[in-house]
Length: 398
Length: 210
Image 1 (cartoon, helix red, strand yellow):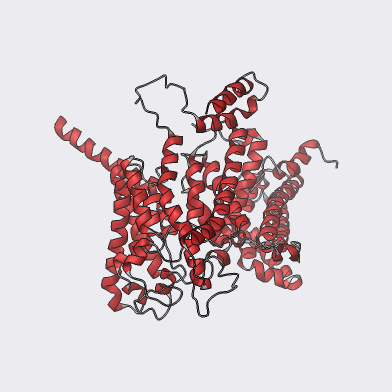
Image 2 (cartoon, rainbow over the protein chains, first blue to last red; image 1 turned 90 degrees about the horizontal axis):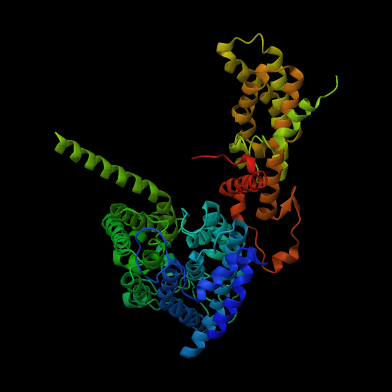
């Protein structure tokens, strides 16, 4: 630590106003504040004495994602060995997952940091820390077999067009990580959907057990002739508990509802995540799920018979509820707006999932849609407040 | 009759500083719809330019006789007649492209660039400057169309002008064409990027608001 401190102290004069490398000051600043608590003191206005800044809060979000990440790494290995029919120990599974997942994380961070640092240098502002989170979110919401260059292109695209064109961190309308995923989904559909991409090694097709199916639970439910049982690649039925724990195929970090709930606790205890949005999102999903269950008798869409509580633990719903829809920048800002925003996002997720035959999963599109509507919701909530208070004021004036 | 520098400006200005698409943001719909391939973009750009030149010329010749109250109807009639001629010529000589462009040739009638130039320029200027103005605006429209179509065809289908340019070796290594480039939203983003680049080069184009 001492050596690091000395390094920064030695470098500092060179990047200050008259220094030779002043143009690199934002890069310097980024690394400096990453390692040390900034010693700048707010000079104006009332403020709270606290060491928390956006870099620290972003780091906490990354920390909250760790359980889901580590479970995802193990799950990748578990399914790989399940598909190839090899008996494997815990360490083998974990190592296989590590080999698969770490490069994706590296690709996402490389693309993100390249865009962030370049834009910061060009615009002369400081490097925004928002990418610490997006860079970890992107690997968690892609299938394990996605080519690395696609992750790179999608992340760079999402940061450039989802965030930087609007003015950088805090100004974006859309959630950058979901923008990256939407880009991948529409640009490279063959690599982002289907039954072969969710399990490591399945698309290459070597040494796969005969008759092994890589379909996700949602794909099974959406398929024709769905009879109400979900099963793994070898045809063994899943219990609700399996799905809750996350021992199912899917995007890397989305499968385990339990691990995501641990992350949710971290976010809620530290006050970074918003419980109103999380709760209303789940309620919205549950409401639509129950509504569809109730209407299932009138339709021949067997997907509608999937019990509502299954929807909460399958696919990206839990992940979306905790890490995506709560993004403080793209979500609604007013309290009442948060309830409406979260509820509708959850509601539409299940609606797209079940009623749109093209997509077995709807969380991504639903959250992006509600991101766009969040400012509108806020506008009407605020207008409503103004109207009510005005009415009260004029009533008391009379 | 020699061209003065003022006349020349009529041609060169719309190419950059007064570009109909990136600065005036007119004619966007067709720019999004027909830029999947370069061939259709070029044909579309030529069609619009030809219609623009003749409608500007005719309107300019008639400008003192057109009653002001029905001028829009007269302009539309001129444009519609020209569009029908162009459409027939396309059908006769480049049938496949004409099929690809489908309804968008007919929609040249409603292209904002045409109405804009007729109203803003041809109604108040002599024939020669009107023709020059039409050439400039048609070219300005065409340049953007071709840039967008070039990028979309290259990244979306790996081709330029219908010829494969991305080598097969790339595909074997795992390169995949970007399906999003073929969809209209990406055309909007491409046009947006061109506007972004243009405005960061020419700061005077940035509007001051607030």
